[in-house]
Amino acid sequence: MVITGGGRGIGAALARACAGPDVSLLLIGRDAARLGEVAEDCRARGAEVEVAALSVTEHPALAAAITAFDARRPVDLVIANAGVSGGLGDGRAAESFESAQRQLRVNLEGAVATVAPLVEPMRARGHGRIALMSSLAALQPVGDTAAYSASKAGVLVYGEALADFLAPSGVGVSVICPGFVTSDMSARYLGPKPFEMSADAAAALILKRLARGCERIAFPWPLVALIRLSRLLPRRVSRYVLSRVPVEIAPDRAM
Image 1 (tube, rainbow, N blue to C red):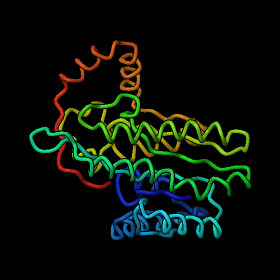
Image 2 (image 1 turned 135 degrees about the vertical axis):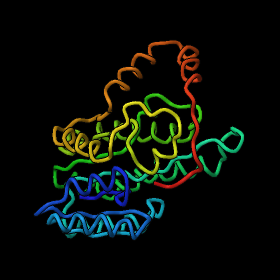
Image 3 (image 1 turned 90 degrees about the vertical axis):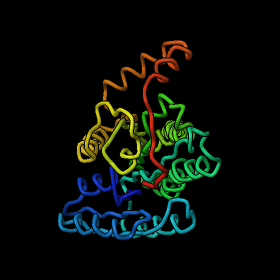
Image 4 (image 1 turned 45 degrees about the horizontal axis):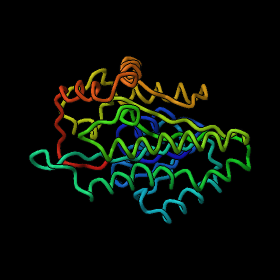
């Protein structure tokens, strides 16, 4: 199993929830110390764990680490979870190009770079599952986080297209669209966070639905239902409603 963004948040919770005897994990993330802590927790649960302290934007190194691990321990599940968020500048100035570019590179390019080394090996074996971490922002974009919404929408569309491509091979693809989950990233969002859930609860829900083979895992259901309803309204109406929700985002920080 391969998990990116495995040092904190949902990634760390997923790693701990998956850990056990006969489980081999490759945890990837930028913070070596945090990765080490999660790895020790997983080893205490009986898992074999390797770590790679690197960013998903380091494409050659990322591919090399994943390919080498797959050669030793054929991967049956990869979770492309690493991500960053952004937001507006001082005085509600538009987010900078540099911030937007970083989000697109990490969230979208990083997800594609994570799964690309495993697509053909999984096809050859005829089984496995690819999971991509999107967001409810892909279903309901937020004006103050345009680049983040765009990056996660890209992940959603890529995952759905990849699922179509891989369907005949026996390899499954799931796109995960969480709402508010307690994490360093969520803590940056200072507005209301309806139905916020813990990382451990989110991980349990995600793994349960992955085991069922769900292709889209969107939660919590009340927010999903509201988003579906809002998509039936004229854009100007939903924009008016969203504009009445107070939003404040702390300075940018990687997940």
